View 1 (cartoon, rainbow, N blue to C red):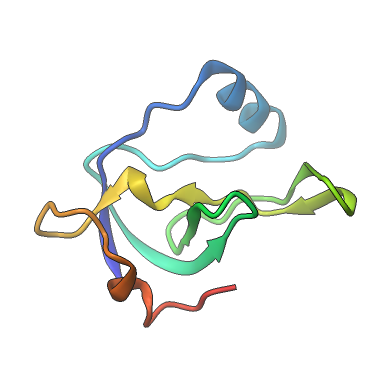
View 2 (view 1 turned 135 degrees about the vertical axis):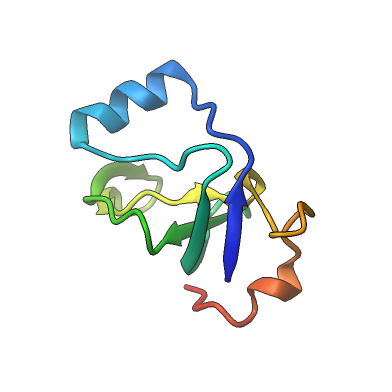
Length: 97
């Protein structure tokens, strides 16, 4: 599924963390293709993009301790090609994990 980035504003601490591990972020008004959809423990929907393949980064998990995985980007940072919010139904054709 193709989407357009509508929000590339990340908090400074997040950008500093990403810089430490060489993580690239999506850029506003750029077209991306969703590679995978991931559900976070917070219930938020995150996506991985075909055009950005990042290294795994450490994250604290309440049960498993420190785990490493590729960071996802909140689906709310993107819109459809028609400029509409991405609906859950539209993500059903993308791999969810």
